Length: 346
Ligand code: DP6
Image (cartoon, rainbow, N blue to C red; front, side, top):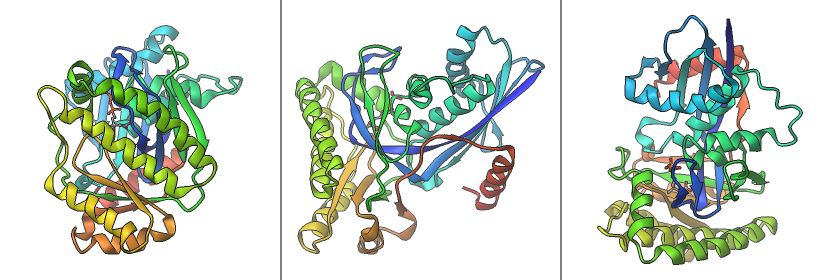
């Protein structure tokens, strides 16, 4: 017997960062975080549970993946299969709609799409649950922490909770009040220190880490108020402050490490120039890599991008509006998506 599930999930960028785990196996974070889901980057995934398969097969962008990559996915699908005594193996087909040069991690959208496709393939009836997407976010979390937040669109909190059942995403606001983001690709190559390893080293060795956890709590409360009041300036100030504090913990870890590259600083300086000299409200944040994400108003996106063109080539500047929640796709939508992928050659 065969059953299928197909889902699309968008990636997200944290404005209040998740940095550090208190439980590595369960992906329970040290602090709650908050992000903006992005329209421009997403993953489409189809899962076919098929009793004739002898092992899981994972195809990424039409290419059959090696054992190591497939094992990560199998382990994730087992979170669904084992408790349900589901014995079928799966064919997993995934397409990342993230420009290759973007250097943006796709794990957030990848695990959220996998969770969405898998619950459908398992024929779970979540209609009676009063919070189906929240429940699914607790599964996505165990693939990659940041993917917890990709179950919802707009501004999303990942409430750290107290255990594996309640450490979940909460939709905060649909971000439909003139919000945009420009991604400045400083270096598209894979990062040298993964976020997983980087956060572990920071928690273990940085004397700044306890201060980070404490101040992230305050930042989260304040940014939620700013979002509620649609106060863009306040929201941007808190996001920029929070992001840089996270990076400061790494400089103080042993051995110290840093994701900034010279052009990351150029981009940061230009964001400051935009707001202080040109009067365009814009704020920056960075994750576990050198790329800079500029939070600005959607109506200013073109102006902001034009300004950055003086320093970066066009293909390194990707504009995005807020993205939507994870959703399941029809077979027809899936076929269109593959066609789109193959034509674009992303
Ligand atoms: C800096 O979610 O990639 O982007 O849970 O180990 O998979 P794992 O880490 P991951 O870490 C993201 C860290 C960050 C901040 C954030 O997205 O909140």
